[in-house]
Image 1 (cartoon, rainbow, N blue to C red):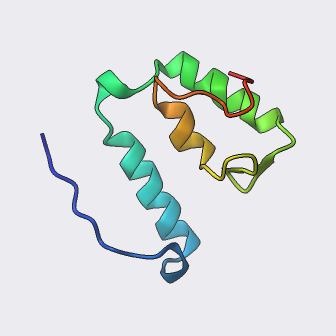
Image 2: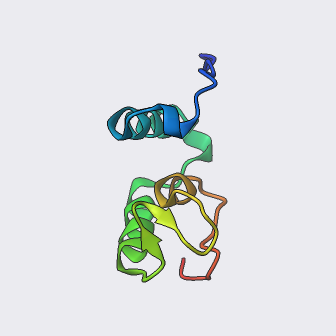
Length: 82
């Protein structure tokens, strides 16, 4: 298993493009056993896209990045929408 190296960056010290690139690389590197199936992941994201609490990729209910919450099989929506 490849180890990830923490760069100890604050999000305010990164450009938006770099930050979201790092987020997507992190999601891609999560063990498959921990991830939701692709169809379930996409269904979850479609629910989030319609939610009034979504703002700039974040859930205003819990503060998570919805793509990160939705990718983990064990996670649930904090408002019970999925």
